[in-house]
Each structure stands twice: as structure tokens, then as C-alpha cells.
Length: 95
Image (cartoon, rainbow, N blue to C red; front, side, top):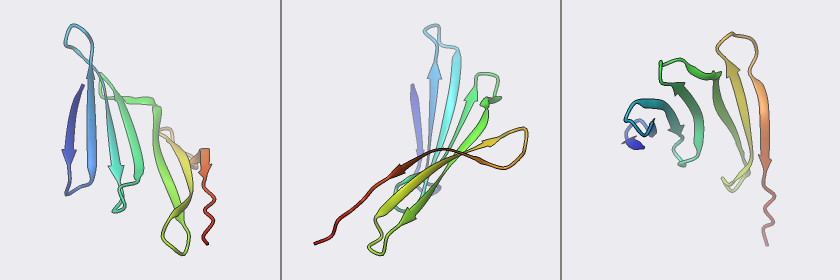
């Protein structure tokens, strides 16, 4: 695997290779200013979208700026409305 980081764009690219050195695929991650992952795009070796989709993450924060809900949304390359894939909830109790 080869990792490529771009701090200015807040991105990370991960290229994966077969044992013989041929490209297996690549994943591109984008992060927000709080270093939370907000987008994932994965590609096959032929540069087509893996599974024909791009994933984005919608993040909700509480009044203390801590995230309380992350919803992963799938966007198909065939169009249509983005569909929620799963959500992660976090309950924080402040004393």
C-alpha cells in the first residue's frame, strides 16, 4: 500500500497493489477541519468507481462542538437521491 497525504486539501489517497505489483485499487478520503472523515471514493484498477458509489458522511454536532451523529450516505454513479447507509450515534453526558 502507498499512502499519499495532502494537508492543504485535507485528503488521503491509499493505493493497493497485487503481489505482482499491479494496481488493485485506490481509495480517496476527504476530511473536514476537525479531522473527521467526510467523503470516501474507492476506485477499481481500471479507474471505475468501486461498487459504483461514492460515500459521504454528514456530521451533526452538539453545542460543545462534539459530534453526536455521523450518517454515512451512498451516492450512486447512476444518479438518484443519495441513500443513508448507516448512522453512528454518540450520547455525551456533561456534568
